[in-house]
Image (spheres, helix red, strand yellow):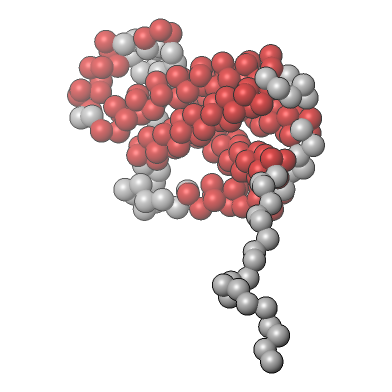
Amino acid sequence: MNTRPTGTGTRSRPLASPPDPQRLLAVYLNDHLAGAGSGVSLIRRIARTHRRTPAGPALAELAAEIAEDREGLRAFMTALDVPAQWPRVAAGRLAEKAARLKPNGRLVKRSPLSDVLELETMRLGVEGKASLWRSLRVLAATDPRLDLTAVDRLLARAGQQASLLEALRLEAARSAFSAPAAAAGHARRHGGPAGRGAAGRPRWAS
């Protein structure tokens, strides 16, 4: 006699456990920490390259701010009991170094296109950082471990950084893509290559 139980023939599956918010937060913050490391490396390289140009002082100050922002992220991670995953951070730095091999129209000498691409990359990175601060601001509304005032300060500074990078990016694009006579005329109308542009922004020079 067949004593096996009858049924549909399908095995019952255990219910999937709900996602762990702390684990998701750790992945998210470490991804941004890796990006922050790449950003610090890139902006320092940009500042070194243009330290003797009219934009040099502004870029040096920007590099210092972005390094401080990374330390701010580390402080938030400590407050939230999220350890840094250093292999992920190291991978981000390697990705930034690999990006330097991107073709720029020249084989040996630095191309003006490099300035445009690097500033564009930094602008996108700062916009991503602003999204991070906005996410943490949402968390700070219910988590007393986060300093809402500090998050707001970093968010406001990200907006200022993005505006500066966009102004410099546009100047670099104009310098790279405009005919020499047109670029010189624009420089004369806006204070010359060693002057300042609209709203007192430092002018770009390669």
